[in-house]
Length: 195
Ligand SMILES: O=C(O)CCC(=O)C(=O)O
Image (cartoon, rainbow, N blue to C red; front, side):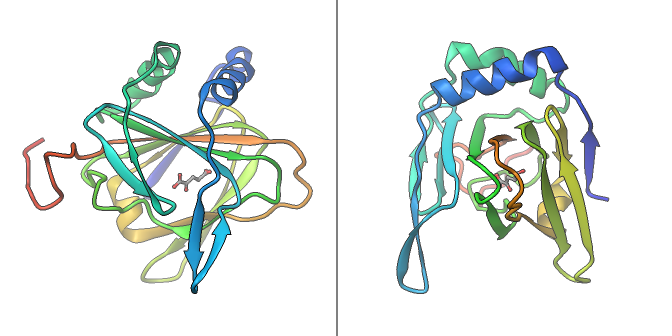
C-alpha cells in the first residue's frame, strides 16, 4: 500500500482542544468552483496556513501563505516529527456533517513537491476515505477516526485517486488537516532542486 495509517496517533485528551482551536482560529471559506459552466459552492469549508513563500491554487482561488501562527506551532511540530518532510503548508477541510464531502482527486498540483509524503490528520467524526487505483481500478477504503494520522507516500498521489463520500448518518463535524511540502514561489515545478 502507498500509505501508512497511525490509528489514534494524537492523544485522546488533546484531540478536542485541537479541533476547537482550529475551528475557532482558522479563517474559513466556502469557495465556489465551476463545473460544466455552472458555479457551485464546494461542499465543505476550507482554510489554509503556510509559510510566506507558498502560493497554492485550490478550489478556484490562489492562496498565499501568511506564516504560521504561534498557536498552531505545537501541532505542526508534532506532525513534522512523524516524517522527514519539511512541511511548509497545511490545508484544512471542515466537513460540517455527513453531507459535506470531497470528490475523487489526487493531491498532485504542480505547486506540491511530489517527492515528499503528505500527512493527513483527522479530528472529530469518523469518515470513510476511499482510494481508487488509477491504472487497475482497485479500490481500498479506510475509516479515518478522531486522532488518526495517515501518511501518504509520494506514490500514493501518482498511483491512486482519493475521495470522501457523503455519509448521511453522520451529524457532527469532522476536521481534516493535510500537511504538505510546497515548492516556494521562486522554485517552479520544472526546476529540479536536490533534496
Ligand atoms: O478529508 C480527508 O480526509 C481528505 C482530504 C483530501 O483529500 C485533501 O485535502 O486533498
